Image 1: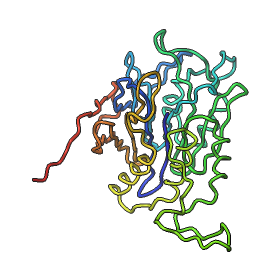
Image 2 (image 1 turned 180 degrees about the vertical axis):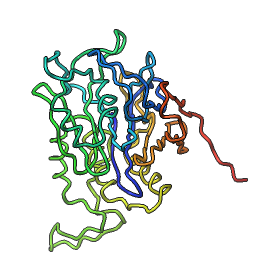
Image 3 (image 1 turned 120 degrees about the vertical axis):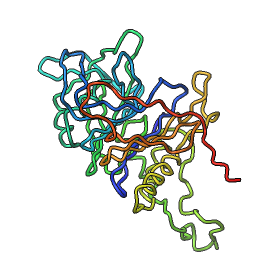
Image 4 (image 1 turned 135 degrees about the vertical axis):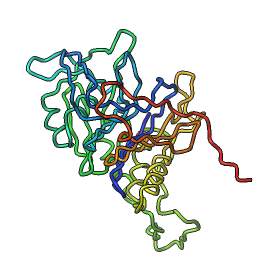
Length: 323
């Protein structure tokens, strides 16, 4: 279970939570311009946009969870189990395995509009990375500083939805999630008025009662509503540090605490949160064990090289003793 958002503040920011019961050896990964992307179709792409994001590296290949290219285009893949569908190869189409979608689009394109056009020619094929790795059942949030879309490849075809609120969680499909927001039309960040009855003298007794009914459980529908309300009502900061801090506070509204969700006999938790300044190429992150904000700047690396650049995640807490 995961949550992804984009956020326009001091700059454009894009990031997510990865909420799972396990890790995949993920690390912050920079793919420089001259790294060779070898696709299952036989195509090789080199001399592409540089990319930064969170990935598991398998056989020197970056399997990205979320990433941003040097043009400010960002993509995140979130679980869409039971609804995602990948078919057979189709002649005349660009046939990609699901794990290839993020690197293919970020390597070649600069905007959401370019991606939306390219997606009309893409066919997602149920081709594994190797015999030990099953394809993740995913849908994708794609964003730039101007707009956002959701891509859902289902049995009845690929659906591309305009996403005016820049939020995505998991099941059910995006159209339902947006429709479900209508059930919370009365929520507000201001004190409510008594519309119950003019025959009963009802009064507010606490701050925040305008948001009574805002869900707080860990289901994907509830997280969608809560993070949308939190993001759309949050104050827009005027500087980089405050913007990054605010982004993590927004994601923190739906953070999964270890022990509250059990899956397969294990506890789900927010393994990491990420926030990328898409215009400056700075990737910020926290891990469950380390609440300090850590940052990697892609422009401090040689982006014309051919080798992947990887930074291991920091898991030990850094507590600042002041006495």
